[in-house]
Length: 301
Image (cartoon, rainbow, N blue to C red):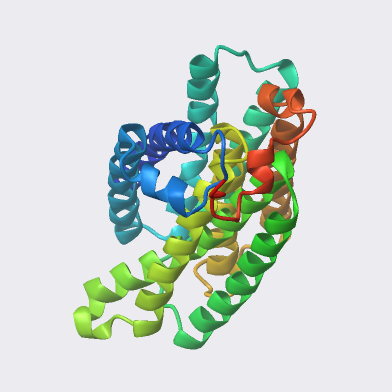
């Protein structure tokens, strides 16, 4: 079952990269002159690339749900980081630009950092029932963090806004992974009546907010930075919740704990480095006026 879960998660990561690239192209084509306001949203739902991206990401979500139904969060969630090198390559080919040495090192650092993290965590993972009180606490913590990221993103511009909103989305998606595992595992053991209304409701809300943040981030920066922030923070948040609050792993202290922290720091370093040295990031001396109107509807003038 674990091997099948890993296979589903790997396929999901590749779908995530392709879907992110398609959605980014769709968002940027509809927000050249305006921010992602009400009019731009109306145009998005008719944009073929954006709709194709939605379809691919739907397939990604199904694969992730299947993976989480078959294995613990600490094994499945971090595999999504494979989307980072994939989307970096796709975006470089689409834009005709080459990643410099620092950007390549950033992608490798993020991938290896999360790989170390999941390798250490997965050796201690076991299926458990998540207590409702702990799930509620996790929801409250992540909700507060997502609100803070949203407020900061509303006041910043350009790449900083892109990174902030994508990070907020990553936090939301990390919670989504935990809640999907809770819902699917409970459904398998206790049936539909055993599924927690809190987990089901919070799952929908966190996914909706994370998806909205992602679209806003696409309007402010390149897709590999968006995916980098999202795919690094999401598994780290999911695994931290599973280990720290929900007790999905045992004996993860000592050397293992230091390795987890080290892997997380290397991964975060990689994302920061990618944001600073990405060709599109370094070419933006001043943010476009459209980015300053990101959170406002398009002007009627």
